[in-house]
Image (cartoon, rainbow, N blue to C red; front, side):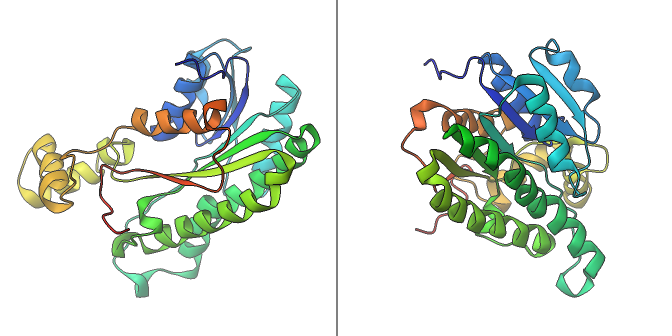
Length: 263
């Protein structure tokens, strides 16, 4: 299926790893142009020429990052067709009482305020053209809070709420706003040294792959019996960015292997 994304201009935040990297690669494969923001975007330059991908070194926990990446996109390509708010952090916690104000600030600023600021920076350009797409990467934790990720869960619930509000306000201006909520996904948070997979492996006394399989099948009891992959989330993002989803706005698409069973 031709998604009609050739020569579209997309900003992707948190573009250098995990879901953000998969989304960036998927856009480039469709012939789109990507402005990718990350604290360490060096590897993005290897994905295409400077007329295809523009790496931007930004820290989305700062107020300046949003205007910096939007300015760079306009400077490089003259417009922004799609914004993917993907950047986020998910530090494991002992419990609610032990989370300090500073830790709450770090998570809410990085995960939620980056969405607020980058959307606010790009929307005037989209309104001027009477067209645009914003896709926010939330999480199943936004609806099914996790004790060890309580501040992360709150930040993702806030993203779900704001997505609905933006879809309502800017729909008349031709702008669609949707959310993609992944479930357990095999990102670098799992595979990096000391990551979730290593912790599970040690706790369960299994090798890493067996521990991940056990987690998917027996701990989370995922109906599909496995973890998701970043490329599977990216496929849904690209659909929502395309004209194939021209009548879809204010929606949440879950990519979670059936992990949430509530209606």
